[in-house]
Image 1: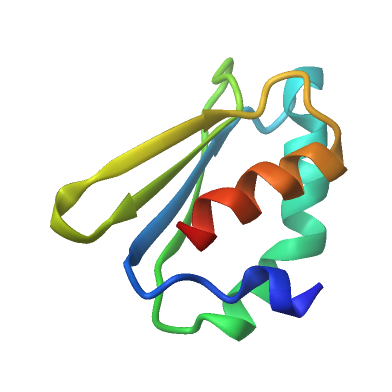
Image 2: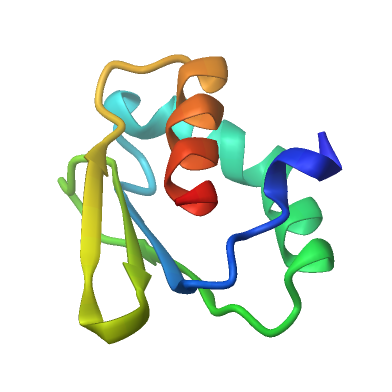
Length: 92
């Protein structure tokens, strides 16, 4: 798994938005509980921000060089699907 979270050099920031209590964010919370320590250990200089707000739909934002930003909705995805979506974003 650690190889999956080796971020591309162009990635400058990874930001997760989700609700701290809602069922639609439970897979995102589960994924972050499991994967955040590994991502941070492998990429200590890249900011990985977790933003919790009541009623927020789960999303992940990746900011790259020159201000380019991509967003993926994590709503309705399983833990494995979230992992695939995040891996795709961090490898670009």
